[in-house]
Each structure stands twice: as structure tokens, then as C-alpha cells.
Amino acid sequence: MVIKTEVNSFITLTQQMPVIDTRSPAEYSHAAFPGAFNIPLLNNEERAIVGITYKQKGNQEAVIKGYDLVGHKFSHYIHTALEIAPEKKIALYCWRGGLRSNIMSFVLGTAGFKVYLLTGGYKSFRNWVLKTLDTPQKINIIGGKTGSGKTKVLQCLKQLGAQIIDLEALAHHKGSAFGALGQATQPSVEMFENTLALQWNNLNPEEAVWLENESRMIGKVRVPQKIYETMRLSNDYDLQVNLEQRVKHIIDEYGSFEKSQLADCTKILEKKLGNLRMKQALEFLEKDDLEGWIKILLQYYDKTYLYGKETRQSNKVITVEANGKSDMEIAQELIKLSDGRN
Image 1 (tube, rainbow, N blue to C red):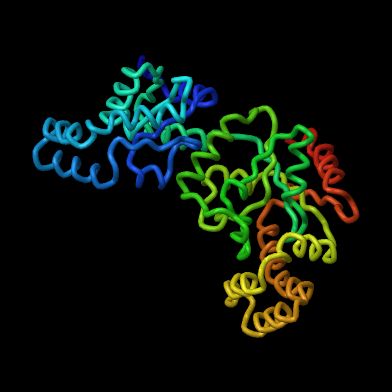
Image 2 (image 1 turned 45 degrees about the vertical axis):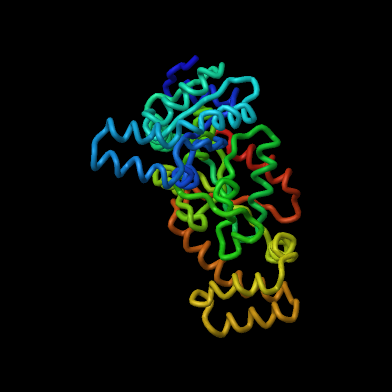
């Protein structure tokens, strides 16, 4: 059985069953519906052959060529789908809800699967993503200089029942020259948007969502324009943490990495630090003096943070004394301070 499904219903269904992406491996690896499995009807080379046939000989010949290329693989599709969805319920899409997903739906349908086919395909999902990311939402920002422990406070807010989105976790990057250390490969901007949109859609619009203060770029991933603009205009709860605590936080986070890795990341900042400070930082690192190394780096990061803070509306920056307090105590204070401000 094949049931054509609009994008909103499709998204709801994906919480109940596996999702199959029938596009080519190249299309899938660039970006896909988050969590989807790839069973390509055509591989990269086969897709190119069908495309050339379509341009040279028209739609009918392209369809015939497609069947020539995939007909012998029908049993493989069924076996693979059974491994993914043994209960025989599956959500499925291709690029525009056309030939590839229709063929796969037909094949799986004849094998007893209940197939929910996304009308308009991945393209309709992408339109939904872009519309969702433009949807207004109340935002609270956790600010503070590098090493203030913002991520841990964000997770404590989640434990207290507040709405949060961890942009750095979605981007697989912590936002600094050292942000890729220990992280998985960053997703494409498109894949980042897809994952973020699903979380954004689940937010309660009556309550604010907490985000960390971020630059427009998180590594190579870009924060969506509308969200970034709203972040810059939102209340910024600026954590005041002394230098000693910040240094300790940074050592706890990065001190276990190899010196060679830390040195390579430090060198990325050469133009920002200048030759003298760069040389000093690397010397401290070579001597295993992580505290000295960090304090030099913070000269740059603190200056950058203060510049960004000055570009915010002063009445939107709320100072939060965080010295000597646990992450949970800071989170509890943030909730109290934010009541009635949004």
C-alpha cells in the first residue's frame, strides 16, 4: 500500500517509522532528512546516464533506461528495506516525489510494505525547512567570555525544563579555532538547517528558547539569517566568571588533546594574535604551561567578545554574577531573571 503524504504529516510519521531516501549517494551525503537511510534507486553513475538519456532522447527513453538499470535490483531493495523496517511501515522520498520514489514505493508496496510517500519529495521538505527557520520565536541568549561554561549551563537549563537548542552540537563545532577538536565532521549548511528546523518546529512559541551566544558562523556552518538577527536583538544574560575559573574550564575541555593538535589550532590565530604573542603562546604550550598558553589566547578572544557585546543594545545585556556558583545554580538564576522579560 502506498499513501501520498504532505510534508507536515510526513514529519509526524517519521517519529514512528524509519525514513528512506531514494536519491543517489551524492545527493544524500550532501544533505537529507535527518535520520533517513539511503537506499538509492540509482547510484551516482546511473543517475548521470539517465540524465544524459533524458536530454538526448526525451522522457520515455530515460524511463526505459532507468528500468534497464534498476530492474535487476528490486529484490535487493526489498531485503534492505526489511532490515531497516521489519514491521513493513516506512516513510519514503526522492528529490521531487517523482519517478525514483514512485518506483521504490511500487516495489516495496508489492512486497507488503505500507509506504508513506512524501508529496513533492525532498524539495518540499526543504521549502518547509526554510519557512520554519523564518518563523519568529522568543530567544534568550547565554553570553559570557570564552571559558565561562555556557554549554554546561545550557544543559542545566534543559534539566530544569527550559527550552534549549545547542547550536554547537548540531554544527559539530564549538565556534573557536579549537572548536573542531574532538568533534565529528561538520554537516553541510543545508544539513545543519534541516536538523535545526525539526527542533525549531517543536518549540513552544509561548516560551523563550535558550541559545548560546554565537557568531554568524560556527566553524563552516552558518546560522540562519532570521535566527541570527533575532539572537542579536534578544536579551543577553552575560555570565561574569573570573579569569582563574575560565582558565580551569578551558583546561578541563582541551587539556587532554595532543600538544601538536593544540599548536596547529593556535597557528590558525597567527594573524589575530600577532607574531610575538603567537611565539609566546607556542612556547608556553611546548613547556606544558597550559595556563600561560590560554591566557595569551584569551587576550584575543576577550577583545573579540567585548566588541560584539558593545554592538548589542545596552538594555538587552543583563549581567549575571557567576563566580563560585555551580552550573545548576547559574541556570536557576537565569530562569528567575528571565521571568517576565520576554
